[in-house]
Image 1 (cartoon, rainbow, N blue to C red):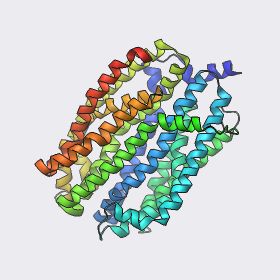
Image 2 (spheres, rainbow, N blue to C red):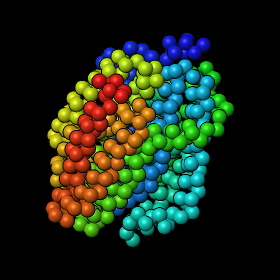
Image 3 (cartoon, helix red, strand yellow):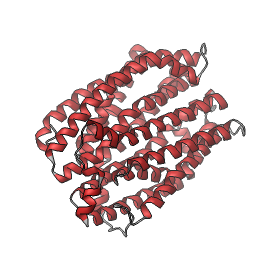
Length: 448
C-alpha cells in the first residue's frame, strides 16, 4: 500500500524547471493573492475609515505577527517532519503526527484568545498607541483575538495541504479567504460604515473559510494524509517547533521591529509617519509574496527528496530554485522602482504629507528586494532540511538583529532617511551570511 501511495504522491516525481514551477505555482499564486487582499484591506481602511485607522493597523501589527508566527512555526516545522516520514513510507505515523500538530495549534489559539482579551488594554498601551489611536487599536485587536484559533488553523491547513501533495487546493483556500476578506471588508466599511471594526470582521470571517474546508479535507480517510488518533509525542512537537523556529523568530522579530518603526516614526513625524511606514510595510509584503510562495511551494519537495536520499534530485531542484530566485529578485526590484509611486498613490492622495513621506521612503526601501529573496529561500531550504538552527540564524539577522541595531543608530545620524535604509542594509549583510551557510553545508546535504 505504501509503495502505491508513494508512486501516486506528486512529491515523488522527477522535477525539471517546468514541473517544479507548475508544482509551486498554486502556492505562489496563493501568496500573491494573500498579498493583494492584504493590500486591498489596508486600502479600504485608508479610504473608507481615515489615516488614524491606517496607523492603528500598524500599532497592533506586532500581535498579528506573533499569532501568524506561531501558526507558521507549527506548519513549516511540522511539514518538514511529515514530508520526511512520507518520503520514507511511514504514512500512518505521518498522519498521527499531523493530527497532533493541528491539535497543538488549535489549543495555542484558544489560550491566546483568552489571555489576550483579558489584558487587551495593557497590550494596546504597551504597543505604544497614542490617545488618538487607542480606541482604533482596541476595537480592531479585540475582534482579531476572538478568532485566533481559526487564524492559526488556516495557516496550518494552507501549508499542510501542500505537504499532502495538493497545492491547488491550498491555493483555493487562500483565494477563498482572500475573496471573502475583500468582499466583507468592503461591505462592512463602505455601505455599513463600520470603520476599522468592519475591517477586523472581514479579516476574521475570512479565516473561517480555509479552516472549515481544511477540516473537511483532512477528515477524509481517502487522503494520503488525514486525521488519525494521534500519538502524544512531545518530541514531535519539540522538533516541529525547533524546525519551524526560524519562522517564529522571523515573525517575532518583525513584531519587535514594527514596534520600533512605529515608535521612531511617531517621534519623528507623529501619526503621519506611522501611516507612511504602514503603507511601506504592507507594500513590502505584497512584493515579497513571490519569494515566499515559491519557497513554501518547493519546501515539501526538498524535504521529501531529502528523506528519500535522492541526491540527484536535490541538486537539480536546488539549481532550478537558485536561478529562479535571482531572476525574480532583479525583476521585483525593477518593478518597485518603476511603479513605487503608483502603489503609494493607491493608498493616499498626491500632495498630502503622508504621500510625500511614503514616496520618498519607498525609493530607498526598494533596494531590499535585491537581497531578501535569496535570504527567504535559504532560510526555507534549511527548514526543509530539518536544520532549524541555521534557518533561525538567517531569520534572526534579517528580521531582527541587524535591523534593530541599524534602527537604533541610523535615525540618530540621518533622521528619516536612516529609517528607510535599515532594511536594505540588513538584507544585504544577511545575503553574505546565507551564501557562507550554503557553501559550508553543500557536502552535508548534497544539494550542490
